[in-house]
Image 1: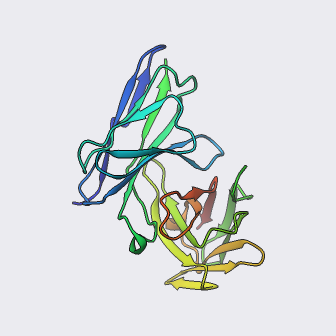
Image 2: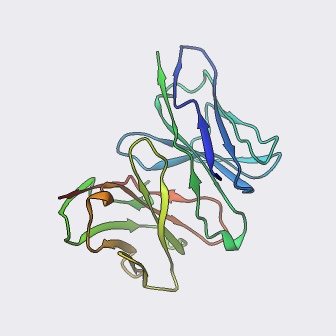
Length: 115
Length: 112
């Protein structure tokens, strides 16, 4: 089955700790994205990557870091610099280029809470 | 500044009736609009889209209408079914761009 897998489903972070959220896709998509969802708000873009070894900051990148060493994988690290990390995190992927029509395919999400 | 707004946090509709979900946007550069549906504990899934060169797109029970002059789009679901109960996100982008702006979502309840 093709799709996007996010893990873990739930994650707890202690003060001063970095945590990494995993995102893997087997859709052969070039582009991948990380979003954050807070109650009553839309999905806000953290980082996106159009191609392996390249990524760009989204609207709320501060306190987060990413890597894109493989086409299939786009892990997100929530660093200790992110002072309000409690949120629902969604990873997505899409084809690249004009024919993609910006349709994104999402994982089931990771809920991060602070202990 | 919210570029895509869904002003109704929730909507309740009787089964078999029409559901109308609304969305407003502010950026004139947007030329492609999408609706996503999200069930609890799942990621959003693409539902239907519309290009700015059209004013209507239909797919089965789902129809999206676009009013460019008013910067407004709406999703009509006819007839509504209990399985349609979910959160619906409106999203906007421009062709070839990688950034998509999402609204806050509208939770639809379809009562049997």
